[in-house]
Amino acid sequence: MPNQSTNQLINYLLSNGDNALIIGHRNSEWCGHGPVLEQDIAITNISLDLIGQARNFYQYAASLIGNDSNEDKLAYLREAIEFKNCLLVELPRGDWGFTVLRQFFFSAYQFYLYQQLQQNKDEQLAAITAKSIKEVTYHLRWSSEWVIRLGDGTEESHSRIVKALDELWSYTSELFLPAPYEEKMGIDISGIKDKWIQKVNEVLCEATLTAPSPKNEHTGGKQGRHTEHLNELLKDLQYLQRTYPGMEW
Amino acid sequence: MSYSNHILQSLDPAAGEAKIFTILQAVNDPEVPVLSVIDLGIIRDIKDLGESVEITITPTYSGCPAMDVISMNIRLALISHGYKNVIIKQVLSPAWTTDWMTEEGKQKLKKYGIAPPNPKQQVCNQDLFAPDEAVQCPHCNSYHTHRISEFGSTACKALYQCDDCREPFDYFKCH
Ligand SMILES: [Zn+2]
Image 1 (cartoon, rainbow over the protein chains, first blue to last red):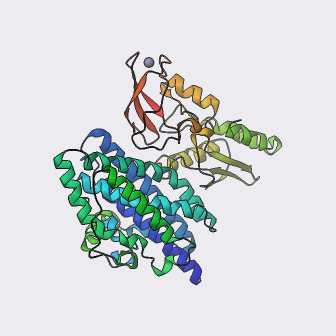
Image 2 (image 1 turned 180 degrees about the vertical axis):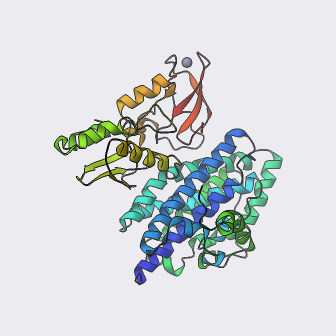
Image 3 (image 1 turned 135 degrees about the vertical axis):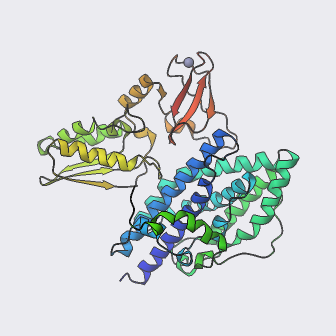
């Protein structure tokens, strides 16, 4: 039986893995449906990076959980209530503007978070995030460019991203509300938040957009309180293992 | 000095590790079959423990789908050379970079029609809407080329076209 601090680390790894898996899955829904071929391939490759990151977090978590836990069981056999991702990542993909703006908010968060985690005293957590930050750097650049392109684009693209901004904004504060398992991980969440706000304002400004004033905040995902969208997503993601347990390619 | 030469020098020829190195030079990356796992710079350590062989590898990208196939091919190659107990360990740190690709590997890529990765320091421009990286055409050596797509047939490659000979080509992105 893992002790309390190991349990906390396991939950923290699951939370990071779940964020990466769920947004990776949402992005993968664009495969074959991207607005142009180049961007179809770009978003699919970003999915691949994120799902790869999720595998690294899950493999490490499984090794700490012990027994016969493994990455596949963690991804395919947990119930929605056991997932610790923030609500932002589980929302349906929406239109292209919604997808790229969500990716931008998330990548900016991941970038400043991984910057700190790659120095973490837990060596494996540091290794996973140091490996991933190169990919996240690209995701952040790619999504920033798209937010600017759409915001400062045509009347149509501008109005669509304004709508996405309005819908997504109230899901961003959860990123910076620490769950109990995040509190002793040695990260400075308010430092991450400051940098995130600065980056977001910079890009929104260049995209001729303004952050809405805060209203209702949607939170709870990190503690397993999800929207119905996660159930729907998991029905798709977990279908094969639920229907044919132990099935392999 | 490239990374794999560094490994070679640390190997003990008497222990048979140099022989394993030679076997690995014939195990190719399934996505870029002209490169061996040694050329790619993903072999981090080789240990001949008598009863068993331990190979340590590092992934290129976190989500590289070729890693499982590469592990299997390394295992098969060693088994076919009579090694019975093959252990393959994966490590993430320090993170792989294209700077670890061997010179020989870069030459092989170019001959194959893929532009080899530029040294990392030359291209660390993270600015938004940064101009395309200057990449040399592997066919006619011209630098008058432009990027068509940031991603090509795999995550590790971008698609370019030469403005002089007009040939499209893959560029193995620096990472
Ligand atoms: Zn040419």
